[in-house]
Image (cartoon, rainbow, N blue to C red; front, side, top):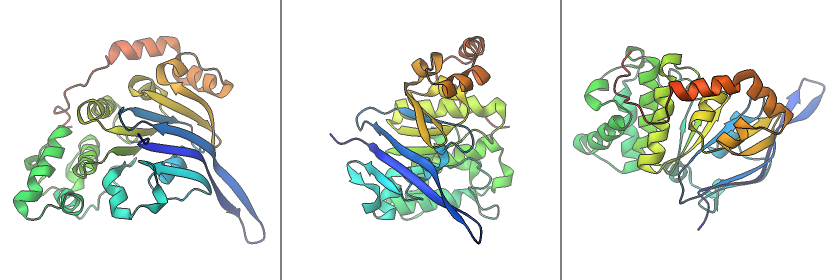
Length: 281
């Protein structure tokens, strides 16, 4: 069986410079990993700003083409996909939910359009059913957001709408680029727990891009750690973050996720899906 997603020595370089000089900057250097088609998981890419993690996410989403190497979805080169067919399989969730929606456009319009484009639904009743289903999967409902504009919702609610919009397409893979960094700290774990439920209940695989070791430790199945475009460590999340071997990984862990703080985090946030419908602030 083909892998759901496979990256084979993927690199990306950009031209940087001024009027009289240009240099090539390697943002991502020969990154390889694969996600199994028959085993949904949360695969996390960890790195600080400038590590190449967001460039990697954009290549997986087909926004940037690799300078070298191959990205395959279901055994097929991502570059060979027609764009709509690709987006039916892979959906993005971006960092800032307030930038994901036009402030002058009602939120339900986005979800209806997604249902029409990817689900083939036509007519009011046909689009409302899958939209309401997707919203209920994230702890909301169509009556709650119908006719409302982005500024009328909290950041946590708006990020849930963004996730629901992705779910309407019924993708096999979600690429979430720093999805909780702009959400209030008190609501982050409800979003992270939601990703765990989507993996477990819907069989979705998620590529989770983050600089936050605490949420990565808590929710990830496997991970890679990137430094200056290079993967310096990879493996099962708990094993890597509990006993990192690379100096950069140890530096990150010691700065953010000490053994005491990891224990306190596990005690405060038991690994189970929490009730999400209470997020209304």
